[in-house]
Image (tube, rainbow, N blue to C red):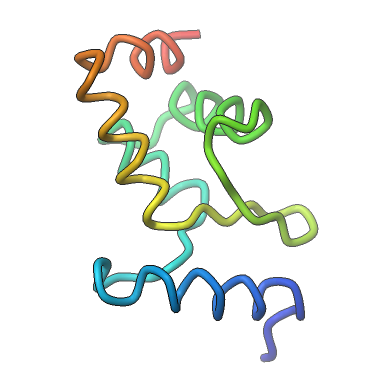
Length: 95
């Protein structure tokens, strides 16, 4: 199976930037990103993650219907979450 062209380019670009800091995959699926951000995968965290993607708060690469989130974005959002004690992210998940 070959990767679609857009995804292959995104993996190369993001992988080159994040290779030294992230031993895991360079791009995460929505389920993996939601689990990393909120600690669990539920309908609420799924919807919150899609809201963050659609608002542009969470940088991503879109490949057709699939969203891919760079691993370094998770670190950026986590640092924001730590700065406000998780208040905004918890409110986002509660909606």
